Image 1 (tube, helix red, strand yellow):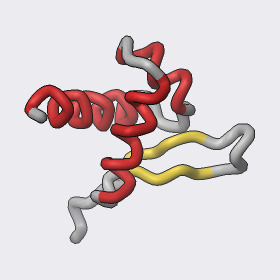
Image 2 (image 1 turned 90 degrees about the vertical axis):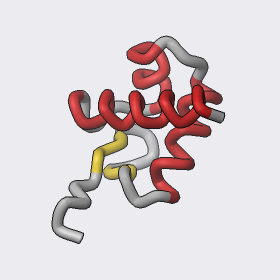
Image 3 (image 1 turned 60 degrees about the vertical axis):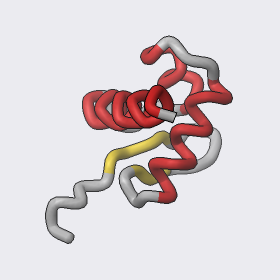
Amino acid sequence: NEGVNEGVKFLLAVIRKNPGKRSNELASLIGKSVQTVERYVKELKGAGDIEFRGAPKNGGYFAIDNEGR
């Protein structure tokens, strides 16, 4: 489970540096499968760290700034 946590944190950092990317683009950026990225994304969305913006065909993931909470 440690490895998954690190992967999720790494994905969040990648999304912060590359806002608006889709799952397949993120997968190639971090060198993981699309399924793995989607699992990480689900965890990050559940924690309120990222959100999907835009239309399903051309939107992407963005980090949510939780500093103000």
